[in-house]
Image (cartoon, rainbow, N blue to C red; front, top):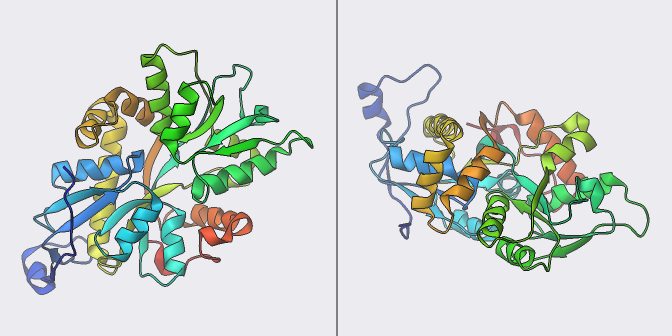
Length: 332
């Protein structure tokens, strides 16, 4: 279903397009590409990309629009470095890190503002503040969720000897397995894995599980001056980052597809299941309904992004490359 994709050849046709196409004010004419490759993880930020492929959203710019699934940020970094993909869904810190390391990438938008959920088997756990002295499964160690969790737990100011005991798992599937077998009581999971855990537990008639609180809800209480968390969006790789017209088209098409997914959670879930069969449609629909999917241009939400990057710079500076990105980073 997802094809192996190589480096594309590009045929620029700016002069021809200028004569044939009416370009909207402020929209720079883009090149014509033999192939464009979109990429993303099996997460909500990817779903609009799948809709773009299904609907031929970029037919004006390429006759071949493909999608490639990646499993983890390390794999994404390799694909970007090899220039095997053009646009990818990504956690918001990754393009900043790459840009600060000299890669000519740009962040086009932010669409995911709430995706992390605390799930528990303990009915007494009603919020993150109730985790004092308890164990929490955390299937991430170096990525953005880990930095956000660290900052949030520090803000809880737990009593001495009552700190949360983090138990790092290899990945989300390991955390789900531990929760389903009763070897874990609390877990912080990225959607759609939180919904997948709830769905599997229901299928197995397991003991009750509780969707306790989103990290974002707790964050708004702990950091009222930085209430919004721009967690994920779409980035343009070096292969296309300088093509402003194409980037604008991608940002606009993505926003339309994100709105469709939000307004049509059932059909969107069915579409996702067709492309990523291991995700049950019911769990995907639950994840869509539980997530704030709101696509906004990166240039528009630059203040929120810089606030997040500044926070990461204090707690985990290597997550963003040690400084704020330059102004040209915030596209399209």
